[in-house]
Image 1 (cartoon, rainbow, N blue to C red):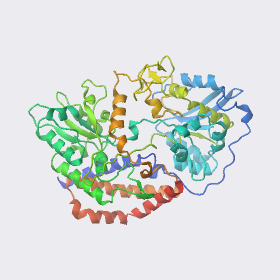
Image 2: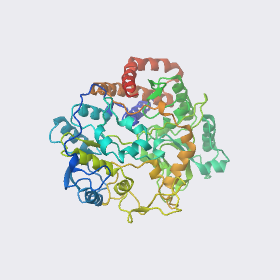
Image 3: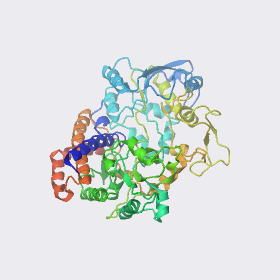
Image 4: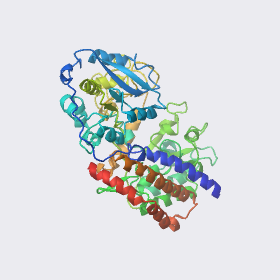
Length: 561
């Protein structure tokens, strides 16, 4: 490979992988890192309005018509929050009128930061704005966000059901000072908690009489057969055994395979017996890079996998006339084929279980935190009736309210399941979808606002044979990935750091991940000799202050635990 192209490849993948890593693990990174630091003791949540609200779980929530101002960002699938059918349903049931402050989606974060910086004229509630743990701690300790502990204890009828069903949630959303400043919107897609998967074209396995690979060596041999034995039967050597994209969603070539050598979650942060570590300075990581290099050097990894965008990858998956793409590492097959497209090719890819590496490593990253959507609902210091604002939140966690908020009106967009109707999980179903989701409408909030949509509810949807996607994703994940998931003790949860520590981590992470990604790409393409350059690479990470990076995370992790 020419050096000029190598540098271009490095720069492209470095930037995209940095961005990918920075969005992983629900904010365990510099851009939204949680603060730990001293927090003042905020005032009690009580505002003297307790007499204006009814008892826990009772409706309507307020005895007199009450107005609550909510700030949120626009949702492209919602026509108008003010006239939305779900908004009207809430007002009818709760006696609470919502006054909306809708921010443009593209500039919402910037405008929110300006509002918080001023500390004046805050709305009663900030909703679905992704308030980071850092912001929760900073503005909570400053008194801009009200602590919710007392309100949860007094009024948390539905909230406590979340804590019972998902015991780790309460700990996750509790700041080091013991306060809860923001509530989540759990949307627990089962398959989405296992993001680093591999998909393979099953008709080629069947045609060549190949078993599903279970080890990295077997996977190599399968790709070799895809390359040399003309599985698409057109007499041309046009098969691409394994491809990916640095700019697609989780389609980087290393995401799945490196976990056969060392546990490598998207965040590149791990907990090893309570010690925070990174995988990219370990000898096992080096062995993983050598394996990727072998795939590339032997023509089993598509050279364009390091430069093409997601659309180009999908063109390979939907190649007209004959299939040419053997395997891709990504969350689901919709990243490289067209869901419900004319070819129907997405139906023919199946998941590859975690492969056992040469040293026996066989693990799949598992992230139960990313589906929590923490920071979804904050009650500010200017809330005139925080009790009513919390009761509104608690009501939206109710099962029927969640279905109305997410899908629409019963009898129109969904209905309760009948006895004998079976859900995606193979058990008695709870509800049935009547219309497709994802169109612009004005009957629900389209996942804006707090909901409680655990896997038990999502998977209790009536299984629709004409729409097999959810069933496929559930079955493939349950059977092939769930048995190999990393333990919670290996996962670094969302952490609270001070503003200063968060800023320092952001700078260190950018430098360290740039270096790690550069080494990854150049090792794959052969621009460097991995064995000869490894010690110098590890030394360069140390020079970039890896020890300080880990120290900062360790401090926050210890405080959390």
